[in-house]
Each structure stands twice: as C-alpha cells, then as structure tokens.
View 1: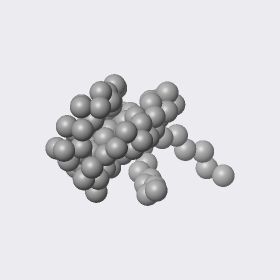
View 2 (view 1 turned 135 degrees about the vertical axis):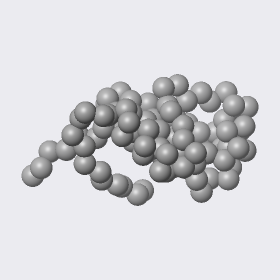
View 3 (view 1 turned 120 degrees about the vertical axis):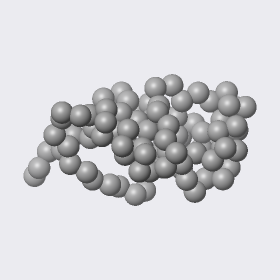
View 4 (view 1 turned 135 degrees about the horizontal axis):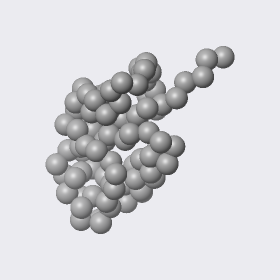
Length: 93
C-alpha cells in the first residue's frame, strides 16, 4: 500500500447558487479540519450571492484562500507547495 499525504484541498462550490446556514457550517468545518491536518485549503467557484449570504450570516472562512475557478485554485495550491514533490489525485463527493 502506497502512503500519500495531501498537500491541499480544493472545495469547488461552482454549482451552488444559494447557501443556507447548514451548508455554510459544513463548508467551514471541512476547511477547518483540512487546515488542522496541515493542508492548504482553497475554496473556488463561489457565486456572488453565495458570498453575500455568507457575509450576512456572519460565516467567516478564516485561513481559507479563494479562487475564481478550479484551475486557478489548483494554481494556488501548487504555487504554495513549490519545491515539494507532489502528485495530483482528485476525489468527487
């Protein structure tokens, strides 16, 4: 069995047009867990209304970078890990 270590987590919410308090909490907790495990976290594809709703609900994404789309999010992860050996794996939930 090959041991791998995640260097980053991309959370792509491009398909979310609206967000409720439960989903905001899930995104926040997922990002926090990933950061605690030592990975970079990038939230990408956030629609303007989703961002506005998060602000209005007082949900801060502390320590989470944002990107316009998946490609730019991947660039952020890779640029923050320069010099480290990386391999790319994806997991769609």
